[in-house]
Length: 186
Image (tube, rainbow, N blue to C red; front, top):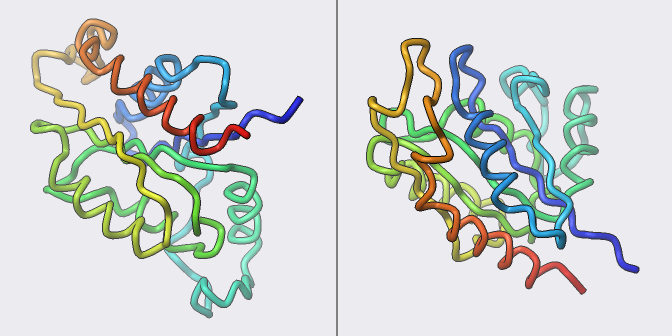
């Protein structure tokens, strides 16, 4: 039996009061259909400094131990879902920084962009697609844009009921999962 393709859901926000991890956990549960090996990659836990390699990543002459460790993590995966909030029509700097640390490790790997915001993170998704294309990743067709609104959150800024609020996104997440499987399952 062939191993299931490994898909990493990268949690692209490190803000202390973030809901990004909750969104990624919900997405992972909805994507589960047995054909993929799904796991979370939390940039808050990875804890990369601001890009500090002396050479460009394309040379792959990494000097820093944290870069070598990050490279090993990313090399373990066959594809990625980038989960992040839209910040001022853009993506979080911590996510861009994590992507910029490496180059060849991303090349050719399928990626889905799952942004959330007041209007589904449309502008940030467009910007991130340019970044992933620059890294020569394969942008899959399904990129769920999750609309959020203030009434979804409690006094502490966390989701009251993510299952109810995101129910309409279950089918796109299943489609995204199927798309990864059709590309990667041999």
